[in-house]
Length: 244
Image (tube, rainbow, N blue to C red; front, side, top):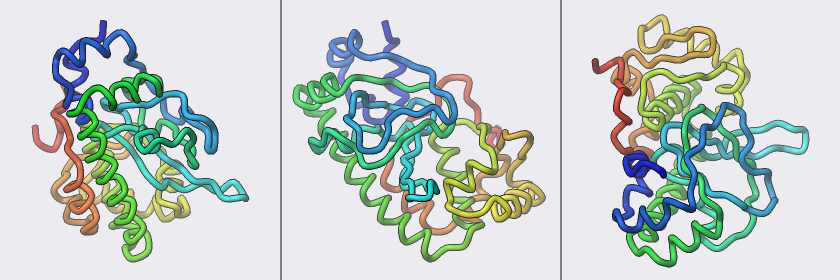
């Protein structure tokens, strides 16, 4: 049986009353997701909906030459069920795990039943869909107007918020893909942040040492994006190192 505290680790699932959680418990699973693990292929039928607890899921669009760029990311503030929430059976983008961790997963049928039967859950989904769309628009402007250092700081901070802990695995190749830039540019930005004492980067593991200083480097899109989402309290044992 899934422990009730797991529901509190995702902003949408936390909207469920205890009796609603009990009804869902037998139809959902707690899974461990690993970095680069594919969850859904573009233009195929949806089968499952994920609710991250401390992992991060990327939504990626691929060009004809195979080049991919992140067009959205999802953490404990939300769900991969945005398209399912508006009644679509397929999704135009691929999704995969960006930062490993735990997620609650349910079938499309279970998701649709929960939306139909639970008003609070349905309202939480609608609120998240609105925020998700607004954030997509914000990031289009961000990618056009703001420099790499600002965007890199914004991306690291959003990942920090989503995993609820100061350290997470991330390669420079992967970060470059997420930002749609060359690896050399990411290397320079990460090195500058590390030399300034904002982060520590060792063998694919990033640790946020000073989130406030990193916020000062980020563009306005970080605060604009964060304003649309609610981030639940981290699981017990997760301590932000820059605040300890």
